[in-house]
Length: 448
Image (cartoon, rainbow, N blue to C red; front, side, top):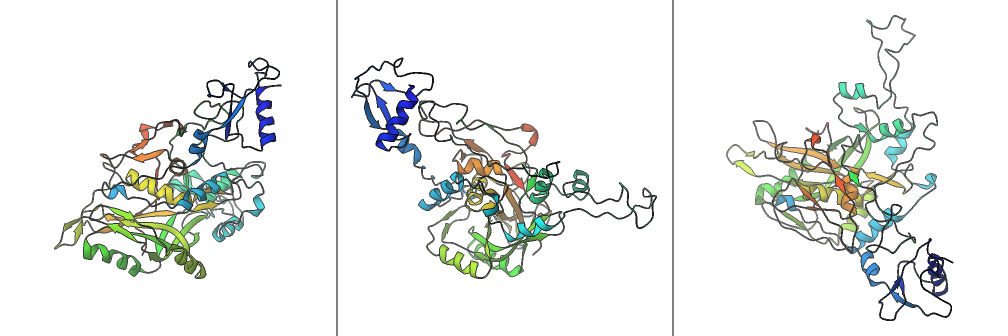
């Protein structure tokens, strides 16, 4: 009989969780008995009639409680997120729940519409290459797949749409029967009984894999439009009057985007401004008791929260009405704190997906930044982003924190007795300071 069998027997008799107790040879906890499949009870030093002592493991109990997110106040690159107690339980339920039956996943309406489309890109007959009649076709004029690399490059589409990526996964001989999307996890898998729990032990089965930051090939949303130009104009009035920054949530719907193969377009119908404290260079969100009522009202109108918007404007010339342009490749497009904020919001709004064993994959939640334009006119301009699934996972599992002196850099936490943090690597060739940002192309000039 191995020591693992002994632990299982104790769990069965006392109806305990495998991580909530520890066994000791001495009453003073001087000698602990560890579970091992290769070590028998006799080899561990136990004999017939010996007494062992059971104690609750407070370390593991403390490990299960998620630490509260610390607030910071270092400028606009330090927008302080407000996370309610229900947020941690929501994220835990989203990450921990497994949905093996794909048919019970309730996907968004736009996903159901795009799944019914063939997605093929029609091509006209080339008079130079096609040597056939009008009713025939050849390799030069046959329809191509929505993920065709040459087509996306010729039409300046930097990232293929998410449904084009799904078509690429299902383009094999099996027709995507065994295609599966796995969410990135940066936490230790629970339930491993071959060793003591962290920090006393970890193995290759429960240890999360190292994360290598790479540019994401696809994007969940391809374009953002506003139904009415007055929406943004009213939102900017607060900054025009007070010169203080502002945050709002975008409510709208998702539609098929015809300019990108199997693309998705977010249409904004309203901007909700939650309670907040703002200055000229910082914003702090406050607890919002009206948010459930706002979501209920939006649902009755057929709308949902599709993103968030914030201002980062500094007046350059009051007479000309110009603003300063300071977000560029030599500084940053999104600060680390803004990327962390975006990843936090994306985790709260997961994208339902039937190809994922968790029932969700990525997020359609977008980030809109209102800042100065890059041309010589320096007018107010909007840039739209989404962070990658890698960044979303690192933020969800509390692996990243912003730096205080460099807004473009993020700091990866070190492993401690309370939490294990996997290794995070990045490539310098990407030429981005915070590699997990994933700018939405075609959004340099959003239509208003």
